[in-house]
Figure (cartoon, rainbow, N blue to C red):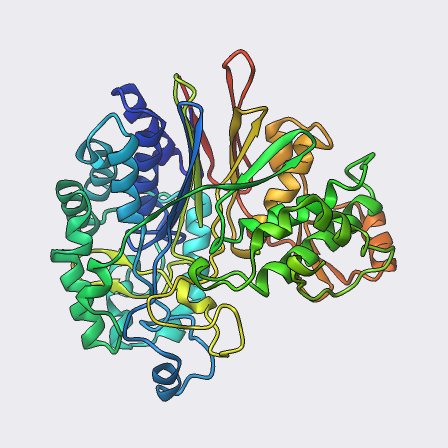
Length: 514
């Protein structure tokens, strides 16, 4: 089974399974196609994370990028910035996705990287049709950012590749990306070495030097992914797994560690939502105060996941909405897809350019749209996520996974920046507290914390409950922007080995299985 936000990508994963590939091969094939057919969210210059369940063991992959070795706070401020800019070369990090593909297939795959990337190359060369949601997002971005880019040299290739006379393609239009195909072939033939040591890396560095970036070839040659041990909390008898920092999966686990101290009678009640709201605010306060490159964290984040810390934070929740500050636990942290094969192996995978198309930088003649993950760095030296050379930033993309008593239950994920851990908490509770089936768990109306005490909720929220929450001190806006609430997929494995897949209605989702 393969679940993603694109029917073309899901079918590509299924194609690889039919050729003898396993869940890892299918996940990489799906991810590579997503880099072609959903450029509004990801691309060849993305970062990635994965949780792999292989032969009854769980593995984590951190393929987030590092900042250039030559960058510094002083150099950024000398260019006239008081904070990290959103677009251009300054927020670009070394992309991790191509090496993630090669590393996953190299360690676990049944097929070669050439075979696995073949569907993505085919779509890039022969073309694909623009889907309804993709058309909406593409037009929204081009309309919003087109004037900002102006005729600046560094954004001209983005306009050439992703617009037609400055306009987004329309629904049903056929799009071809020959430059993407060229890069994908090089990645496939060299097992991603061309991206980090050869032709593509050389082009990225040359364009960076020409347009005021900070990259050198050493930044790419020295880059590698990191295999990590996923972290978890036990919630209602299930282990909920996330990738450790620098990812923000810690936020979801802190919140669940707090919420497991309450008994919830019903989903749609002001009391349930109030406790969820408070727990997620606490979780973000803790994580945002400490999460950064794990090599430079000064807080042991494992303390946040201890039962006694969850009880301590739960005791702080009263009947009134509050604003919380981070605490030290030692004294009392995009596109998603999932796959499963006939042997019970499963993959929870996510990759992203961060904000829409990313930095707006596209590598000329190679179709590599560079992410802007460095936008989350701070130029304040007192902050945990302060900008430094060769550093990984706080990262929003997070894959999730469920297991029970040492057996895999399945992968899940929700896309959407800082919505992601909030989506994880809501989906897990929908499944385990309120016993919704996977499709209902994903489709249920969502809320999102934005800042301070402020939340937005979908229009389907019960208006009486909204008013009760406002009386508790929660400023709530009913927002009709469904794309603010994330887009998710899930696969669950029953005890008899049958898979149940779910793709929510907020996206062009697809479940492919046989």
